Image (tube, rainbow, N blue to C red; front, top):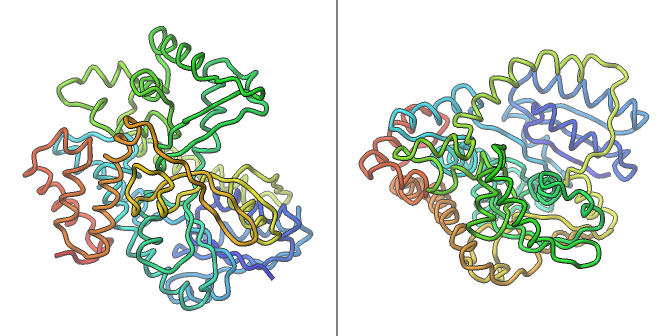
Length: 441
């Protein structure tokens, strides 16, 4: 029997997508699904929802069980075939609030703060020590399990797991799947969606659409570049940062403009406040989303939990397809986050966590060689990889100097603040996060 353990099962909507997909798939019809969380109410809500889906789409054939708190974690994991990770350590209140409000005191503004920047660094440090506890349990009670990580900061967390644990890990993100389709729709080029061919590689949230062709092999980039520049010149829209990437760097990237606005030193600048309006940059976007989600959760909860006829159709989320490919030995292609072993991307260091095409089959996940990225794209990625590697070093050694250095090397933070202010800000963030962080020297 296949056993699927979902860490952070209180993420009800995401649990519906991933585990609903599994319950909608005959391969996992009689699987064992273990829900783990530290929040009793959210765990129970997700369990009610998934049991309804199990009954309505799967004739109740899967076995669903709940595991609450650290003391039950090892049993939730015992014998697992797959472990899905979707945790958020510290939540919106207090941790996200802290990650935005303290930097703001120093004049450092952010949009999402879950991947890079000082917010991404602190989120990574809060989360790694929890995931390292998961890893110790996995190594003991399900050493052959595949760990499917959906938690951000993706490159930092996946890189840590692959370098400092024995757990078979791959990082998964939605942005690769939606990158080219969203671009073509935004540029009124939908006629090329069907049977298009593409190559995407780089790092998570800054993977590059290196090639895109129509079904006949015709290069679509010349027309994409023309239309993208024209659109940025003629109208305000939500994707102006990435369209500026196309103009200045020649290529489009995977994650949204609100994310990418804070991954570089170009767009959020105290000396140039007019850039915020010019590029439609939504400062403090993630806290707004959190507040909105909290406000509408009661209504959403009723739709998910109180509906006895709740159903589900399989989504495009990678997880169930990866599991099915491994279990049935049916080849499948994904964009996965893996270590750059063997020089998958030649102009990145071997210890970098890269996002590249991967083939999946009964033997596991096999990353594909990409070669050299164009130098300007590699240079952009390396400014982010530097932060990833220093944050991982900080978590592995518990040395605070590495945290200071990660913040100093962050392209947005380093371009806005002095070294003294960076050190003071990091110290204040450590104090504010308290027990969510282990002791650092």
